[in-house]
Image (cartoon, rainbow over all chains, first blue to last red; front, side, top):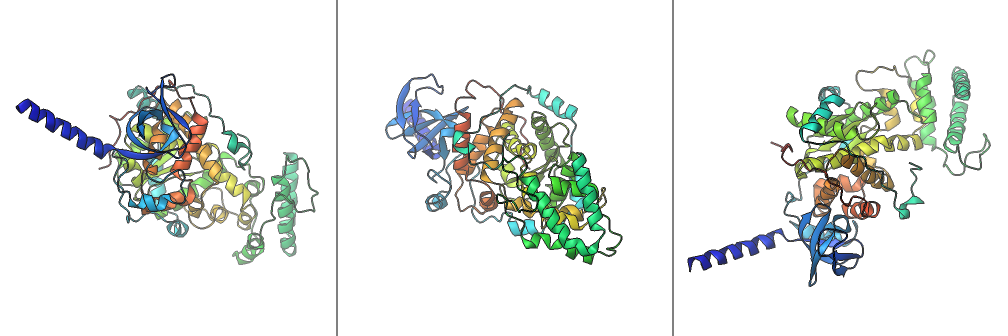
Length: 176
Length: 321
């Protein structure tokens, strides 16, 4: 009896935790839902751009999501967290404002906290003392390398990412 | 190079005749237009104003005679050829780049001071410098600072001055996320995004004043170039520059050995914030929405980071007190 009770409580606790950690998201491009967080894994289903998903967990560059009745893994960069829909502008404002918590791993947003605005920046006066303070915190190449090595960080060779095709013709920033 | 000197010599000759001050403005305008159109197939004639580049507004040329008149000793004022160099040709030397960045950084710090936590500042400099070492610009004296505002944002000024707000720092979960954010800002510096903006806009207005090369406090000539205070940080860049900084910055962080998903995780956190959050108002005035940045980054990354390891270094991450 006691065991059953504990089991029930544990299950309840798990259920509560699951609800609390469920975050919503929107799929940013047509994607397959995979059975494992790997490009070579089997296909469990598919999701279309704009579809709403529930984000269950994360593993490296992958998110485990539920879309309708299907659950599977999708690339982290193929989903946006939050209730704002596909893009930054538009309907997201209304929906987003009503959302107090969409990702449990993050600080809960408190609307109303005063931020930095452009007028403050425009009126800003040069502060030589603060700048001098900033300069004193600078470190050398040797110090930074030693610090990196302490945590086992080592430089890796990785190629530059290409500019996506859609952007190539419109950028005013010229060649790279 | 010889032409450059010849033109500078010509400019200096012209400036010695006060009556021709307005003609100087016109001359500079033409010179600038030609400079901006250099490399384009149809080279415009010197007298023509270039069609592709709108001629500077009258307000931009006006400061030249006005400031000359307002200067205490206009007759003795000399024009610094180096200053002309960076105003006209846009090919800023490292010294000039640092001089511009220093002024912007000093102004930004005038609006928001550093967080008074030396351990935090030191930690951010160590992480930032290590990431910057993967950027290929080792000649830049990189400096990083956490500034004391709850606004969620990060800034970069030319010459290696990088800032992250306390509000954004608070959202971070591990060192890889910090590295991702700093990588984005470092990319703005290595790609010289702000310098390109300056090159495109306020070329002529820097001419009115000749400043000494070594300035301890505020640098009037550079201030003239960058506008009011640190407003250049509020104007923002073209969104393609932001997407480029995401693409380049994520690679810098990955090259430093960090989990490459640091920046995407931070963008996910931003995307999850309610859009009415005041702390992100300036961020979204100057940056595309996090959802668009994730989509754009996804196009570039695709499967390229599959199988890439990397550390998130969560255990060492410095938590704000």
